Image (cartoon, rainbow, N blue to C red; front, side, top):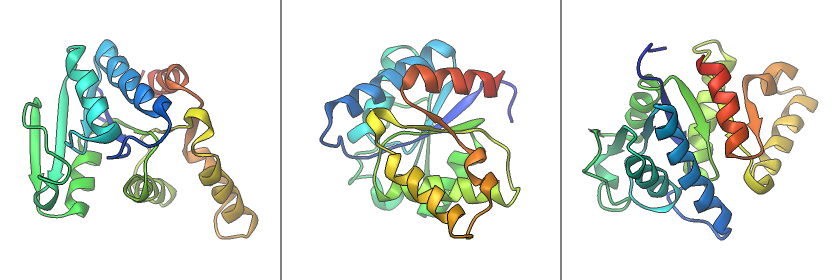
Length: 185
């Protein structure tokens, strides 16, 4: 992990969702990252939760590092006013650059892309490729079905019981901040 500055990779939705609390937790996350001096590493879009985290981080004076593949520059409305912007050729390369430039991962509510990102870093941790903290923000119980699925995988013998120990579940942004602070200390 880099010694300075700590960077938190935020995986989250490129849509706002139907619960206004999700956009609020995205903004709260951005403000928290800036207050802590942790650089935001994210998908470089300016829409949905992703855009809200970046706007809030920047508005609070925080550093931003965005990574976006060429084919999503228009669809995700790439932010070009970031401290650093990397344009990749593929989604796989995007995830690799985001991961390699972060000290920890925070998973906010999102859709299929967020799940893809989460399961890739979880799998990498499971097979010993990294030991970076992965914190899942379970705002308003959003990730309860995912957590139940992980329990199901363990119960059915398709994953070791230690699988869930690879993640920390936080019920809100202050709990996520506490978990990240412990892990990044």
